[in-house]
Length: 464
Image 1: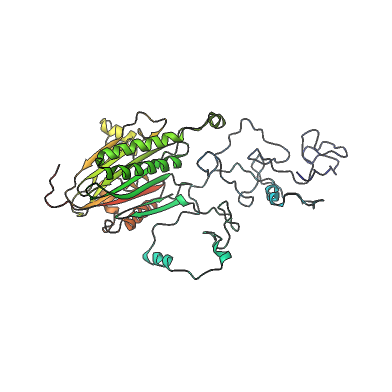
Image 2 (image 1 turned 135 degrees about the vertical axis):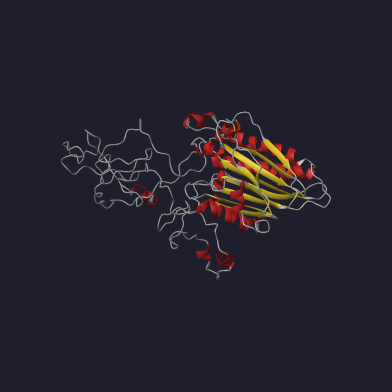
């Protein structure tokens, strides 16, 4: 530091009332720092209050709200966001006036680090619903048109600055927080949309989670005979695992690339799906490879993990594959014909139903219903990719989704009711509507859905 602490100018310690001698910089009894403003400890999440530095051992620090996916906590609250309290929970007294420095500081940029006396950095529990959400996918046609209207040219200096989405006035700093109101800005994965040819996918953080741990991959290719093929992969990070957002992203990319690479070379779509799940598993397993020192520093961490579900649509064939509890639904274009669910969950509830121990309503009402029995990750049981092939005899729509959606439309009939009638012709709009359906229902989880229209089979095609 460029400045030394000031000498004591009081006869007694302000913390323990112990008599002081002239020139003391610290209390000999309790160690109280006699400078005007104590510096914030760099290695403790709680500031010293009344001279009582909290013991580093035996303290159950809460988990930071945000992380970068590598176990590192995100930015702490600013001083204005949380009132300081002492160890008994009572509000802190106002801080003493700060004496003007006798010499200019060497590092002016570091001054804000010591302007929050009494602020606690072991934050309370997060609220159930965050005030700042990702962009709402339930946009009206008028809002879409307004967003596409070119704005008048701005001056170059203003164009480079981001404006806060909450207060619409403050500038957003490099850390992603508004300098005016302090709100964190939406991150890229909070809301994602992609349209590729006739298919589309939308993913949203939801209303209760602090980050989006889902991911997807969609794309189109051609078979060796020139017939088109559509591919969609949807992955759901296992929240109880470490870095679930990284796991879902790695799995969706690996599986999508594997499928789009294998299908043009003549690999049967069902075999290509099986190989894609294995490729996704290897990508997630690779995330667990880390130096031994990392485990020593964070022994509570476990292997990244996620679930996966995917679909391949060709001219006359529909192939699905999955590991976990994300699902694929079939919704026929003719809504007078019944829809169907094409996957079976790898979950505790599904096992109870399959064993005849509970009916479906009882099993899914149990608090253990969503405990998964299959996933991708280094600590998973022996991997058993599920694949199935279908030859629909009529046009329809394939819905690939995480449980963040099907929790609000569990049966095939409920899902069909939620799908817009024009979803096959407007898949991006249909995916937005389905995400909105989940948000309207409560949005308790991340929500991801991909829609793949299934074309009518060519004339004269037989059934398998």
